[in-house]
Amino acid sequence: MKTTLILFCLLCTATAFGQAFGGALSTEPIIIQPVTHPQHASQLPMLQEQSLYYVSTSVITAHGERPLWEFATQTREVPLGDLARLFREGHEDKRKANKVWENQ
Image 1 (spheres, rainbow, N blue to C red):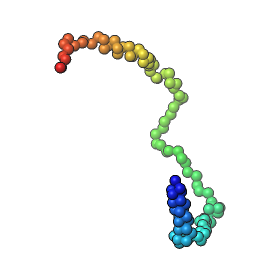
Image 2 (cartoon, rainbow, N blue to C red):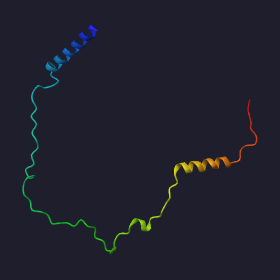
Image 3 (cartoon, rainbow, N blue to C red):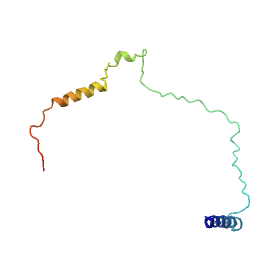
Image 4 (tube, rainbow, N blue to C red):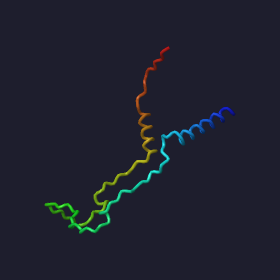
C-alpha cells in the first residue's frame, strides 16, 4: 500500500513539473475578443407585410361543426375475460386425437 501511494505521489509530481516547465502549454493568458456586429442595433425601415395565408382558387364553405356522435359508429368493446372464456370453450370443442404415439 505504501509503495502504491509513493508511486502515485511521484506520478503527480512528475505531471506537475511537466505542465509547468515542459513548454507544451503556454502560461500566457489568451484574451478572447467577442465578434462585433455594428449593424445589429441600427435602425432599418420595415419591410412590406406579407400574407401568410395560402391563396386558393377554389372556394370552401362550411356551415358549422358536426358533433362526433352524429357520424361515429357505436362499438361495444368485449371485456378481455369474456374473450378468454370464448377461446377456451372453442378449444374444448375441437376434436381430440384418437391415437397416442409414444416413441421409446
